[in-house]
Length: 409
Image (cartoon, rainbow, N blue to C red):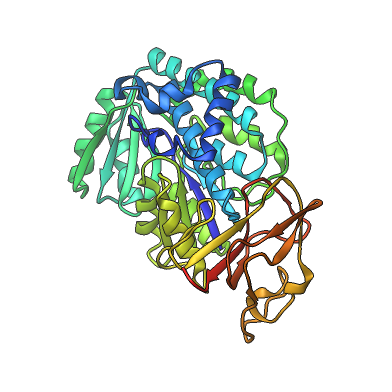
Protein backbone atom coordinates (compact mmCIF):
# COMPACT_ATOMS: atom_id res chain seq x y z
CA UNK A 1 0.00 0.00 0.00
CA UNK A 2 1.18 3.50 -0.86
CA UNK A 3 1.49 5.92 2.08
CA UNK A 4 2.01 9.68 1.80
CA UNK A 5 3.77 11.56 4.61
CA UNK A 6 4.12 15.32 4.89
CA UNK A 7 6.96 17.24 6.58
CA UNK A 8 6.68 19.85 9.28
CA UNK A 9 8.45 23.06 10.19
CA UNK A 10 12.22 22.82 9.84
CA UNK A 11 12.18 21.22 6.38
CA UNK A 12 11.98 24.57 4.60
CA UNK A 13 14.98 26.00 2.75
CA UNK A 14 15.62 29.13 0.72
CA UNK A 15 14.57 28.81 -2.93
CA UNK A 16 12.84 25.48 -2.36
CA UNK A 17 10.07 26.33 -4.80
CA UNK A 18 12.38 27.15 -7.73
CA UNK A 19 12.45 23.64 -9.25
CA UNK A 20 8.64 23.70 -9.50
CA UNK A 21 8.19 27.06 -11.24
CA UNK A 22 7.67 25.54 -14.69
CA UNK A 23 5.53 22.65 -13.46
CA UNK A 24 1.73 22.99 -13.88
CA UNK A 25 1.23 22.33 -10.17
CA UNK A 26 2.99 25.58 -9.27
CA UNK A 27 -0.28 27.36 -10.07
CA UNK A 28 -1.36 26.42 -6.54
CA UNK A 29 1.08 29.01 -5.20
CA UNK A 30 -0.82 31.80 -6.96
CA UNK A 31 -4.11 30.45 -5.61
CA UNK A 32 -2.64 30.29 -2.12
CA UNK A 33 -1.26 33.83 -2.39
CA UNK A 34 -4.68 35.16 -3.33
CA UNK A 35 -6.39 33.26 -0.52
CA UNK A 36 -3.79 34.27 2.09
CA UNK A 37 -3.51 37.87 0.92
CA UNK A 38 0.28 37.78 0.67
CA UNK A 39 2.98 36.92 -1.87
CA UNK A 40 3.73 33.27 -1.12
CA UNK A 41 5.61 32.84 -4.40
CA UNK A 42 8.22 35.26 -3.11
CA UNK A 43 8.35 33.30 0.14
CA UNK A 44 9.10 29.94 -1.52
CA UNK A 45 11.35 31.38 -4.24
CA UNK A 46 13.30 34.34 -2.87
CA UNK A 47 13.04 34.62 0.92
CA UNK A 48 16.37 34.28 2.78
CA UNK A 49 16.58 31.70 5.53
CA UNK A 50 16.32 34.37 8.21
CA UNK A 51 12.86 35.26 6.92
CA UNK A 52 11.89 31.72 6.04
CA UNK A 53 12.65 30.28 9.48
CA UNK A 54 10.22 32.60 11.28
CA UNK A 55 7.47 30.35 12.57
CA UNK A 56 4.55 31.86 10.64
CA UNK A 57 6.54 32.01 7.37
CA UNK A 58 8.05 28.54 7.77
CA UNK A 59 4.68 26.90 8.28
CA UNK A 60 2.95 28.63 5.38
CA UNK A 61 5.83 27.98 2.99
CA UNK A 62 6.18 24.31 3.92
CA UNK A 63 2.43 23.69 3.73
CA UNK A 64 2.04 25.34 0.32
CA UNK A 65 5.01 23.58 -1.24
CA UNK A 66 3.87 20.22 0.16
CA UNK A 67 0.52 20.73 -1.55
CA UNK A 68 2.26 21.66 -4.82
CA UNK A 69 4.11 18.34 -4.64
CA UNK A 70 0.89 16.50 -3.76
CA UNK A 71 -0.85 18.02 -6.78
CA UNK A 72 2.04 16.97 -9.04
CA UNK A 73 1.84 13.39 -7.77
CA UNK A 74 -1.95 13.31 -8.14
CA UNK A 75 -1.56 14.40 -11.77
CA UNK A 76 0.30 11.14 -12.30
CA UNK A 77 -2.78 9.24 -11.22
CA UNK A 78 -1.32 8.07 -7.91
CA UNK A 79 -3.35 8.05 -4.72
CA UNK A 80 -2.35 6.79 -1.27
CA UNK A 81 -4.03 4.17 0.84
CA UNK A 82 -3.27 6.18 3.99
CA UNK A 83 -1.35 9.27 5.07
CA UNK A 84 0.04 11.21 8.01
CA UNK A 85 1.97 14.41 8.60
CA UNK A 86 4.56 15.44 11.16
CA UNK A 87 3.27 18.34 13.27
CA UNK A 88 2.45 21.04 10.69
CA UNK A 89 2.39 18.25 8.10
CA UNK A 90 -0.78 16.89 9.70
CA UNK A 91 -2.65 19.78 8.06
CA UNK A 92 -1.23 18.79 4.67
CA UNK A 93 -2.34 15.20 5.32
CA UNK A 94 -5.87 16.33 6.14
CA UNK A 95 -6.05 18.27 2.87
CA UNK A 96 -4.71 15.24 1.01
CA UNK A 97 -7.45 13.10 2.56
CA UNK A 98 -10.24 15.53 1.67
CA UNK A 99 -11.04 16.20 5.34
CA UNK A 100 -10.46 19.94 4.78
CA UNK A 101 -10.16 21.98 1.60
CA UNK A 102 -6.93 23.58 0.43
CA UNK A 103 -8.26 27.06 1.32
CA UNK A 104 -9.41 25.92 4.77
CA UNK A 105 -6.08 24.24 5.43
CA UNK A 106 -4.26 27.39 4.39
CA UNK A 107 -6.33 29.52 6.80
CA UNK A 108 -5.69 27.10 9.65
CA UNK A 109 -1.95 27.00 8.99
CA UNK A 110 -1.77 30.80 8.90
CA UNK A 111 -3.64 31.08 12.20
CA UNK A 112 -1.56 28.31 13.76
CA UNK A 113 1.78 29.80 12.72
CA UNK A 114 0.95 33.25 14.02
CA UNK A 115 -0.43 31.87 17.29
CA UNK A 116 2.65 29.70 17.89
CA UNK A 117 4.98 32.60 17.12
CA UNK A 118 3.22 34.77 19.73
CA UNK A 119 3.24 31.94 22.26
CA UNK A 120 6.98 31.57 21.73
CA UNK A 121 7.46 35.26 22.49
CA UNK A 122 5.30 35.07 25.62
CA UNK A 123 6.91 31.88 26.91
CA UNK A 124 10.40 31.60 25.38
CA UNK A 125 11.74 28.12 24.88
CA UNK A 126 13.82 25.90 22.66
CA UNK A 127 14.19 22.30 21.44
CA UNK A 128 16.99 19.75 21.13
CA UNK A 129 17.35 16.38 19.42
CA UNK A 130 18.70 13.48 21.48
CA UNK A 131 20.39 10.80 19.38
CA UNK A 132 21.13 7.25 20.50
CA UNK A 133 18.79 7.21 23.47
CA UNK A 134 15.64 5.23 24.24
CA UNK A 135 12.25 6.86 24.71
CA UNK A 136 12.21 5.88 28.38
CA UNK A 137 15.65 7.34 29.10
CA UNK A 138 14.75 10.57 27.31
CA UNK A 139 11.70 10.88 29.54
CA UNK A 140 13.83 10.18 32.61
CA UNK A 141 16.29 12.91 31.58
CA UNK A 142 13.43 15.40 31.38
CA UNK A 143 12.04 14.35 34.74
CA UNK A 144 15.43 14.56 36.44
CA UNK A 145 16.03 18.05 35.02
CA UNK A 146 13.37 19.29 37.46
CA UNK A 147 12.32 22.08 35.17
CA UNK A 148 9.94 22.83 32.34
CA UNK A 149 11.17 20.32 29.76
CA UNK A 150 9.35 17.44 28.10
CA UNK A 151 9.62 14.99 25.22
CA UNK A 152 8.17 16.78 22.18
CA UNK A 153 8.73 14.24 19.36
CA UNK A 154 9.13 10.47 19.40
CA UNK A 155 10.68 10.46 15.94
CA UNK A 156 12.35 7.08 15.47
CA UNK A 157 14.17 4.41 17.45
CA UNK A 158 17.08 6.20 19.13
CA UNK A 159 15.89 9.67 18.09
CA UNK A 160 13.84 11.82 20.45
CA UNK A 161 13.30 15.59 20.56
CA UNK A 162 12.87 17.43 23.83
CA UNK A 163 11.53 20.95 24.37
CA UNK A 164 11.11 23.45 27.16
CA UNK A 165 12.77 26.47 28.69
CA UNK A 166 16.34 27.12 27.54
CA UNK A 167 17.91 26.25 30.88
CA UNK A 168 15.80 23.13 31.43
CA UNK A 169 16.54 21.79 27.94
CA UNK A 170 20.26 22.32 28.54
CA UNK A 171 20.09 20.43 31.83
CA UNK A 172 18.05 17.58 30.36
CA UNK A 173 20.52 17.32 27.48
CA UNK A 174 23.42 16.92 29.87
CA UNK A 175 21.54 14.28 31.83
CA UNK A 176 20.66 12.47 28.59
CA UNK A 177 24.37 12.05 27.84
CA UNK A 178 24.86 10.30 31.16
CA UNK A 179 21.98 7.99 30.21
CA UNK A 180 23.55 6.97 26.91
CA UNK A 181 22.69 9.68 24.37
CA UNK A 182 25.47 9.88 21.77
CA UNK A 183 24.70 13.45 20.75
CA UNK A 184 22.54 16.37 21.81
CA UNK A 185 21.77 18.71 18.92
CA UNK A 186 20.17 22.12 19.61
CA UNK A 187 17.35 22.98 17.19
CA UNK A 188 17.15 26.66 16.18
CA UNK A 189 13.45 27.37 16.83
CA UNK A 190 11.63 30.20 18.54
CA UNK A 191 9.57 28.16 20.96
CA UNK A 192 9.07 24.90 22.84
CA UNK A 193 6.65 23.32 20.39
CA UNK A 194 4.41 20.44 21.49
CA UNK A 195 4.72 21.29 25.17
CA UNK A 196 2.58 23.17 27.67
CA UNK A 197 4.56 26.33 26.85
CA UNK A 198 2.41 26.49 23.68
CA UNK A 199 -0.83 26.66 25.71
CA UNK A 200 -1.36 30.32 24.85
CA UNK A 201 -1.72 29.40 21.16
CA UNK A 202 -4.64 27.04 21.68
CA UNK A 203 -7.35 29.68 22.06
CA UNK A 204 -6.48 31.28 18.71
CA UNK A 205 -6.26 27.93 16.97
CA UNK A 206 -9.54 26.72 18.45
CA UNK A 207 -11.27 29.81 17.11
CA UNK A 208 -9.89 29.11 13.62
CA UNK A 209 -10.82 25.42 13.86
CA UNK A 210 -14.40 26.33 14.78
CA UNK A 211 -14.77 28.12 11.45
CA UNK A 212 -13.81 25.06 9.39
CA UNK A 213 -16.18 22.30 8.28
CA UNK A 214 -14.32 19.01 8.67
CA UNK A 215 -15.41 16.14 6.43
CA UNK A 216 -14.86 12.39 6.80
CA UNK A 217 -11.37 11.62 5.45
CA UNK A 218 -11.49 9.72 2.15
CA UNK A 219 -8.41 7.75 3.24
CA UNK A 220 -7.15 6.89 6.73
CA UNK A 221 -5.18 9.67 8.45
CA UNK A 222 -3.09 8.75 11.49
CA UNK A 223 -3.07 11.46 14.17
CA UNK A 224 0.08 12.76 15.88
CA UNK A 225 -1.46 12.80 19.34
CA UNK A 226 -2.27 9.10 19.68
CA UNK A 227 -0.94 7.42 16.51
CA UNK A 228 -4.43 6.19 15.67
CA UNK A 229 -6.72 6.53 12.67
CA UNK A 230 -9.69 8.87 13.19
CA UNK A 231 -12.58 8.71 10.73
CA UNK A 232 -15.06 10.89 12.65
CA UNK A 233 -14.57 14.48 11.39
CA UNK A 234 -15.84 15.83 14.70
CA UNK A 235 -12.70 14.50 16.42
CA UNK A 236 -10.15 16.39 14.34
CA UNK A 237 -10.55 19.91 15.81
CA UNK A 238 -9.78 18.54 19.27
CA UNK A 239 -6.87 16.46 17.96
CA UNK A 240 -5.31 19.46 16.23
CA UNK A 241 -5.76 21.64 19.30
CA UNK A 242 -4.24 18.99 21.56
CA UNK A 243 -1.34 18.52 19.15
CA UNK A 244 0.00 21.99 20.03
CA UNK A 245 0.85 20.88 23.56
CA UNK A 246 1.29 17.12 23.11
CA UNK A 247 4.26 15.13 21.80
CA UNK A 248 4.27 14.04 18.17
CA UNK A 249 4.19 10.24 18.25
CA UNK A 250 5.78 9.85 14.84
CA UNK A 251 7.52 6.51 15.36
CA UNK A 252 4.26 5.05 16.63
CA UNK A 253 2.38 6.62 13.70
CA UNK A 254 4.74 4.97 11.22
CA UNK A 255 4.20 1.64 12.93
CA UNK A 256 0.43 2.14 12.71
CA UNK A 257 0.68 2.90 8.99
CA UNK A 258 2.78 -0.20 8.43
CA UNK A 259 0.19 -2.20 10.35
CA UNK A 260 -2.47 -0.93 7.94
CA UNK A 261 -0.48 -2.48 5.10
CA UNK A 262 1.82 0.42 4.18
CA UNK A 263 4.72 -0.86 2.08
CA UNK A 264 5.81 2.26 0.14
CA UNK A 265 6.26 5.44 2.22
CA UNK A 266 6.61 8.62 0.12
CA UNK A 267 7.42 11.97 1.71
CA UNK A 268 5.87 14.87 -0.22
CA UNK A 269 7.39 18.32 0.33
CA UNK A 270 10.71 20.02 1.00
CA UNK A 271 13.58 18.12 2.53
CA UNK A 272 13.75 14.42 3.28
CA UNK A 273 13.74 14.17 7.06
CA UNK A 274 10.69 11.92 7.27
CA UNK A 275 12.17 9.54 4.73
CA UNK A 276 15.16 9.00 6.98
CA UNK A 277 12.92 8.46 10.01
CA UNK A 278 10.84 5.91 8.10
CA UNK A 279 13.96 4.00 7.05
CA UNK A 280 15.15 3.90 10.64
CA UNK A 281 11.76 2.86 12.02
CA UNK A 282 10.60 0.49 9.26
CA UNK A 283 13.69 -1.00 7.60
CA UNK A 284 11.65 -3.46 5.51
CA UNK A 285 9.50 -0.91 3.66
CA UNK A 286 10.27 1.14 0.53
CA UNK A 287 10.95 4.81 1.33
CA UNK A 288 11.59 7.83 -0.86
CA UNK A 289 11.01 11.58 -0.90
CA UNK A 290 9.54 13.80 -3.62
CA UNK A 291 10.94 17.30 -3.15
CA UNK A 292 11.61 18.24 -6.78
CA UNK A 293 10.09 17.33 -10.17
CA UNK A 294 12.98 14.99 -10.96
CA UNK A 295 11.95 12.86 -7.98
CA UNK A 296 8.72 11.97 -9.75
CA UNK A 297 10.71 9.64 -12.02
CA UNK A 298 11.90 7.55 -9.09
CA UNK A 299 8.42 7.42 -7.63
CA UNK A 300 6.87 6.05 -10.80
CA UNK A 301 9.65 3.52 -11.19
CA UNK A 302 8.93 2.27 -7.67
CA UNK A 303 5.20 2.03 -8.41
CA UNK A 304 5.90 0.16 -11.66
CA UNK A 305 7.18 -2.87 -9.84
CA UNK A 306 4.80 -5.80 -9.29
CA UNK A 307 4.59 -5.23 -5.55
CA UNK A 308 4.58 -1.44 -5.82
CA UNK A 309 8.07 -0.73 -4.66
CA UNK A 310 11.83 -1.11 -4.76
CA UNK A 311 13.67 1.20 -7.26
CA UNK A 312 12.45 4.03 -9.66
CA UNK A 313 10.24 5.27 -12.70
CA UNK A 314 7.84 8.16 -13.34
CA UNK A 315 5.64 10.22 -15.54
CA UNK A 316 5.45 13.97 -15.53
CA UNK A 317 3.16 15.02 -18.34
CA UNK A 318 3.63 12.22 -20.84
CA UNK A 319 7.01 10.56 -20.30
CA UNK A 320 8.53 8.07 -17.90
CA UNK A 321 11.79 6.61 -19.04
CA UNK A 322 12.81 6.34 -22.68
CA UNK A 323 10.78 3.13 -23.04
CA UNK A 324 7.64 4.25 -21.18
CA UNK A 325 4.92 6.79 -21.90
CA UNK A 326 1.75 8.08 -20.31
CA UNK A 327 -1.44 8.97 -22.17
CA UNK A 328 -2.99 11.94 -20.39
CA UNK A 329 -6.47 13.42 -20.39
CA UNK A 330 -7.06 16.24 -22.91
CA UNK A 331 -9.75 17.81 -20.71
CA UNK A 332 -11.64 17.50 -17.47
CA UNK A 333 -14.64 15.23 -17.04
CA UNK A 334 -15.74 11.65 -16.41
CA UNK A 335 -13.43 8.99 -17.85
CA UNK A 336 -14.85 6.07 -19.84
CA UNK A 337 -12.19 3.52 -20.92
CA UNK A 338 -12.54 1.97 -24.37
CA UNK A 339 -14.16 -1.46 -23.99
CA UNK A 340 -12.14 -2.88 -26.88
CA UNK A 341 -9.15 -2.83 -24.53
CA UNK A 342 -10.83 -5.51 -22.44
CA UNK A 343 -8.13 -7.83 -23.66
CA UNK A 344 -6.17 -10.25 -21.47
CA UNK A 345 -3.52 -9.10 -19.01
CA UNK A 346 -2.72 -5.50 -18.12
CA UNK A 347 -5.01 -4.29 -20.91
CA UNK A 348 -8.14 -5.33 -19.09
CA UNK A 349 -10.41 -2.58 -17.87
CA UNK A 350 -9.43 -1.25 -14.43
CA UNK A 351 -9.97 -3.75 -11.68
CA UNK A 352 -10.29 -6.83 -13.93
CA UNK A 353 -6.65 -7.65 -14.68
CA UNK A 354 -5.39 -11.22 -15.01
CA UNK A 355 -1.75 -11.78 -14.15
CA UNK A 356 -1.50 -14.96 -16.25
CA UNK A 357 -2.38 -13.33 -19.59
CA UNK A 358 -0.32 -11.19 -22.00
CA UNK A 359 -0.79 -7.40 -22.04
CA UNK A 360 -2.94 -5.56 -24.54
CA UNK A 361 -1.21 -3.69 -27.38
CA UNK A 362 -2.24 -0.32 -28.84
CA UNK A 363 -1.14 1.50 -31.99
CA UNK A 364 -0.70 5.23 -32.59
CA UNK A 365 -4.13 6.82 -32.94
CA UNK A 366 -6.04 4.01 -31.24
CA UNK A 367 -9.02 5.09 -29.16
CA UNK A 368 -8.35 4.34 -25.50
CA UNK A 369 -11.45 6.00 -24.07
CA UNK A 370 -13.43 9.20 -23.67
CA UNK A 371 -13.44 12.02 -21.16
CA UNK A 372 -17.02 13.18 -21.32
CA UNK A 373 -17.69 13.47 -25.04
CA UNK A 374 -14.02 14.04 -25.93
CA UNK A 375 -12.20 11.11 -27.55
CA UNK A 376 -8.80 10.15 -26.13
CA UNK A 377 -6.42 8.62 -28.68
CA UNK A 378 -2.93 7.45 -27.89
CA UNK A 379 0.00 9.27 -29.55
CA UNK A 380 2.17 6.24 -28.77
CA UNK A 381 2.25 2.57 -29.73
CA UNK A 382 3.06 -0.06 -27.15
CA UNK A 383 1.96 -2.52 -24.50
CA UNK A 384 -0.43 -1.46 -21.77
CA UNK A 385 1.31 -1.53 -18.38
CA UNK A 386 -1.46 -0.19 -16.17
CA UNK A 387 -4.59 1.95 -16.19
CA UNK A 388 -4.01 5.13 -14.21
CA UNK A 389 -7.67 6.14 -13.90
CA UNK A 390 -10.76 4.07 -13.14
CA UNK A 391 -13.91 3.83 -15.23
CA UNK A 392 -16.31 6.55 -14.12
CA UNK A 393 -13.61 8.58 -12.34
CA UNK A 394 -13.69 12.35 -12.71
CA UNK A 395 -10.30 13.36 -14.11
CA UNK A 396 -8.51 16.67 -14.67
CA UNK A 397 -6.87 17.97 -17.80
CA UNK A 398 -3.36 16.51 -17.96
CA UNK A 399 -4.14 13.65 -15.54
CA UNK A 400 -2.62 10.28 -16.39
CA UNK A 401 -5.04 7.78 -17.92
CA UNK A 402 -2.96 4.94 -19.36
CA UNK A 403 0.63 3.81 -18.86
CA UNK A 404 2.38 2.26 -21.87
CA UNK A 405 5.64 0.50 -22.56
CA UNK A 406 6.35 1.83 -26.03
CA UNK A 407 7.29 -0.35 -28.96
CA UNK A 408 9.92 2.08 -30.30
CA UNK A 409 11.23 4.62 -27.75
